[in-house]
Image (cartoon, rainbow, N blue to C red; front, side):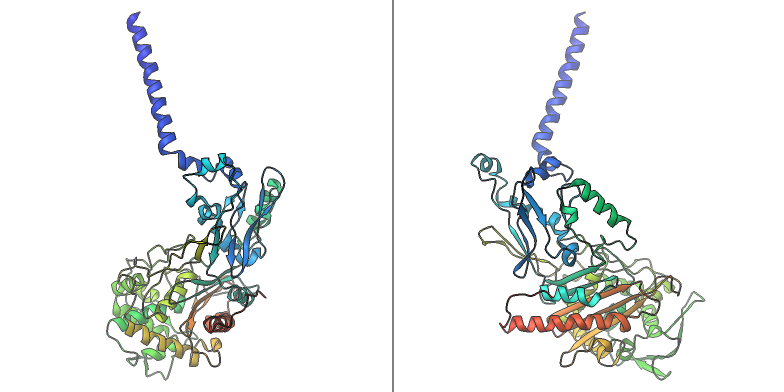
Length: 500
């Protein structure tokens, strides 16, 4: 009998011990994770007691909290919802958070400066303290220009400051209105969400950051960079052929239109780049070799996660390229994939003397009194091999001149702006068999002056769309506004921001 009682007591004590340990783990180690878990509705309700800080562009809030009656004391609203939807995201009792509403949630709720004294603050009646304001690097005029230039077309536009990495515009279309998703009526939120999910054009997808595309001939910037870094010069001559007989395969690579690029005799590297000559670049990629091609792409950040406030899909190029795959990759096809943001970063690095900068969209965090809590998270991007330098300053200057010639007298001529030096590279990437059911992805990647870099992606609209025909004029319209805006800012003539 005593033995049985002892065994039962030992089991009970063991269970109490396990419970004690588990409670301490939850209390001491997991408390923050559980309290801040997105599925914790109590946390969301508590957050609705805070006047969530605004997200600011220029002088205007593009996300703000409005007082209401009821359990949820504030309603999150978005005055220009669709224009900034993929940046702001939504703040929803049902759907939780997305975009910057999720990425900088602690700053918007004011937690970083209050986490230690939160309970004391509640006791002292300071629960109505507003959150911090998040000020963005976006220029409202450039963002509006991107929206207008893309129009009804599916696609994305990213504009960067090459010297700092600041995002001046990031627009993806189709877009959505985050206001219905932030409603306090759960049934209305679910209904709006289901309607968005049912659409074939996937408006919730941020095509600037979260969609990978084959870059097509825009990838020739990287191949040309590899060639120049390995000692080639812009005037180096190559055979001008209508087709390149790719080793180890019966499939040839031809030029756009099926003909030669110049006279049919020889063509220089700079002219092959200007005219986007596939046969030259496919052969060049094979001659350089897969290792050199991949290494140069990785120095531009391929196969590395891009540091950014919002999630970005990593651009990719395979390491195990055979000869045919190397030839196809050299013209931006096969398994090479890249985001619009990343292509804008590559153009920015070329303008910036070969240095890769960290892209960032948050300019500063400011407390309710207007004081600066912290600045941007910009600076040199040191993750890629080369400690942030993708190419030498000499190669960057050579590439810059070659990109200017593309716009002055090559495939990017529709991006010309009188009186402004514009450079770029077009791309027309095939996404499958040629035909109306598999239209290409049209690209323009480039810059205007030294202050603006841009990438335009227009996927899947028409089989006749090319980078030069479709993406280049879109880039021109945005660059005109961007240059005028930047010039006005530097000359001190900027008045209050306006959004057409």
